[in-house]
Image (tube, rainbow, N blue to C red; front, top):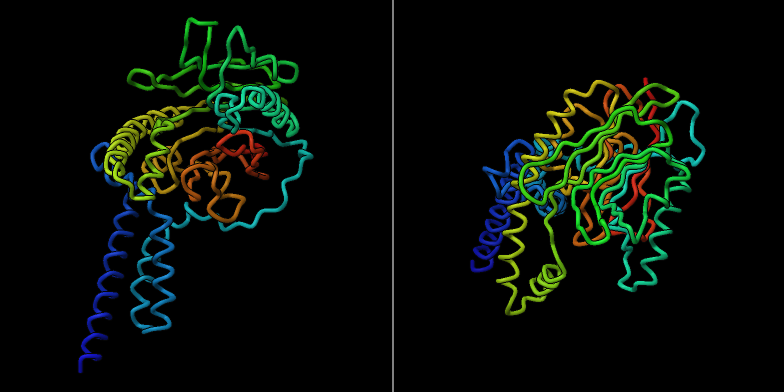
Length: 368
C-alpha cells in the first residue's frame, strides 16, 4: 500500500512539474510580442527559451518510456510554440561556403571586433590581433564591411588597415575622447562609392546609433545599415559574480542583484532602440541589408520588432542554433544579417577567427 501511494505521489509531482514547464514555455513564446519596458521579466524568459525547449524534449522522451499519454503535454506545447522554434533553430542544411563569389553577388561581412583587443590581455598580442582582424576580413574579399566596436585615434590609425581595399567609409563616432582624438562606434567600409550616409542616434546619454550608407555598385544602389544595440555592459566584476553564483559563494546574492539590474535596464533600452530601427527600415528607398550586434536572442521583442518580414540570413541557409557570442552561454545568437525581400540570399557562414568574443558573419546576396 505504501509503495502504491509513493508511486502515485511521484507521478503527481512529475505531471505537475511537466505542466508548470509547459506553462512557462508558452509564456516565453509571448516574449517577442510583449514590450520589456512594460513586461521586463519577458526579456529573461526569451533568454531561457532554448533551455525550456531542451527540458520539454527531455520530458517528451521520459513520458514516452514511462506513460505515453502524458507525452502529449510536451508534444502539444512544442507544437503551439512552433513559430518561435522556427526562429531559434535553422533547419536548412547549407553547403560549404564558397570563397569564389558569383558575379551577381554582393558580399557583406559583419563583425563585432571588440575594439581590436583580441582575446588576450597581453599588449604585444593585442597589436598582432589588430592586424590579424583586418587580414581575416580581407581574405574573405567582401564588397562591404560592417564593424561594431571599431575605434580610431591619432596614435592608432585603424582606417589605414582597410583604406587600400576599401577607400570609402562612414563612421558613427558614437564615443569620443579628447586624448589623442580617440573615437569609437560602428563603421561601414565599401569598395564602391558611398553616395549618401547618415546617423540616427538613440535616445539617452552614452548611447550608440544606427548608421546607413547608400552604396553605388555595379548592380545598382543599395542601402547598408549597421548598429550596435544596448549591451548588458557586463564588466570583469560581473563575470566574476557569475562564477560566484555558479559556486554559490556568500557574495552571490549581491552579484545576482547587480546582474539583474543591468539586464533589466538593457532589455528596456533595447526595446526602444528596436522600434527606432524598424521605423527606419520601413522607409528605406533602396534595396537594403541590415547588419549588427543586436545583443538579444531570436526569441526576443528586439528581434521580432527589427526583423518583421525581412529575411534572417542564418535561418535562410543554415542548420542549428547558430551561436555568435562565445562568452556566458552556448545559445547566444545575438549578431545578425537581415536582408530585405528584394534580395536572394546565396550563401552564409559564421567564422570563428579566435580574434573577438563574437564570430564574423559573412553572406553573399543578389538582387532579384
